[in-house]
Image (cartoon, rainbow, N blue to C red; front, side, top):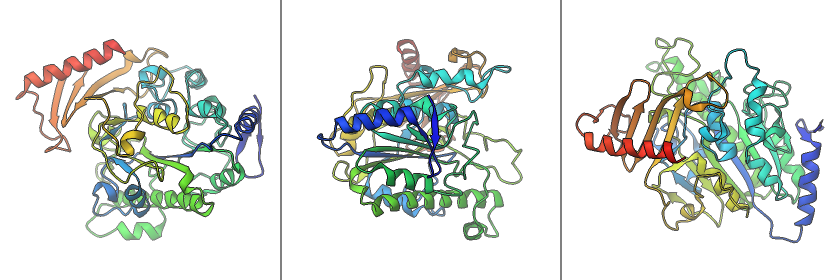
Length: 428
């Protein structure tokens, strides 16, 4: 495998592009498959958008997308840590399946030793490439060279954990690589992975936005985070505007999701932790694991809210179905397309997930690093602290921020949900 740097500013995998081009030519007479744009917010709380009810953070472009598409307000990630969550988005697999559960390998282990987990997974770009898609990776990608996930084009060619280091940072500095990729695609369907480090730290928004939020009674750290959310929203608008400019909006499935949640600590609280305040990122609470989904595909999705419990393992089957491809048997998620079109409900009664430590104990042995398991059934959510063998039970309908632990008051429900978690672990 070798790559070439295009004059457009992104890198092209020569072999991947050749395969995609041949496949596209062989399907020239078939109905055109939809383009897919996957927008991944980074370290953003599920409450922190206008369409989710935030009264101060301005997200007009995400709000407009939500008004046009199907919104799943009860969406979740299986685990609230960057690498594991991004790998799930790329593969449709639970972290315990793709084995990229922790951000870092064991001490003394080269990071490259984690890359085969992605190389051997049924990654979306690889599957879409079989149907003739061109695909572009921009922003967050932890798995070395972009071709490790089957992308035909991309920014990340090294082992950097977060972003490509030799190009302007996507989102904060430029959107041009995405514009150029879209413009070059012609009639070939494309998949764009837009995963900027936004609103992820550093929280350094433009002054014009910070001034809007830096009011006297608000902590400056909170103000910066609020401004970062609006800045991210602006970049989403720029991407969507380019699709409209090229008259591609009607032929494109746009999906929005966050990789995990976030709670910004105040200036007094901040201890320079990269994970924010407690009960947010890296936690089993909703401010860590919950994220709304938006699906917009004009003529195929219906504007409105879907109350189904959804997981990010559902997004790969959704994209594959939209593209006319079969879902690999290993994927346990459900396509959201029918529900997003207003047809029926998802055939599930509960969702499950796990939380892991930051640094792996032993590669390929994820059960060694589980700290919590959780389940949500209807409005009820059970959290099991595996290491302390303690339980927390919450009714999210009247306690959305999980302040009142009802485990002692409702032991029967705890026992039943505990058994559901145990069956999930045993049967997977």
